[in-house]
Amino acid sequence: MRNIQRHLEACIHTEQYTAEVYSALGQAFPRWKKLFFKLARAEEKHANILTLAIGLRRFISPGAHGGGLPASTKASMEILDRLAAMVYAPDISLGEDILPELMRLEASSAEGYMDEIMRGRGGGGLLNYLRQFHDDERSHLEMLRDLEDKLDSAV
Image (cartoon, rainbow, N blue to C red):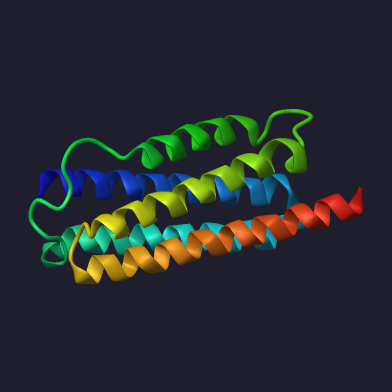
């Protein structure tokens, strides 16, 4: 039980960190503020639902998660650290520097949620949320691809 709780806490932190990075990007790139703030709100929602899942332990099956954090969670944190360092760097390019990292982040998050779904970790209620999060992350990836297309066509 402690391992799944630890993993959920790491996911909450990752979702909150992602929301902070998206909010900062909205401020740094005002032209795309609406998109980045929309993505930030979605990540905040994920964090809130995961926080509830920890409080409602009936959603979590005993022994559902063994070992340390999944590689996808660690990869997401590394990407977020790089993004946080980039946001206000001079001469940073949204299309060339930031967008590829954001796309890796969303793909990594979707992969992590799919891994949990495939392993059947957590109870039925939590699995339903994980499925929704996976779909949300894939949707975020599509939004970022649309942004990439817009940036490419503007050049």
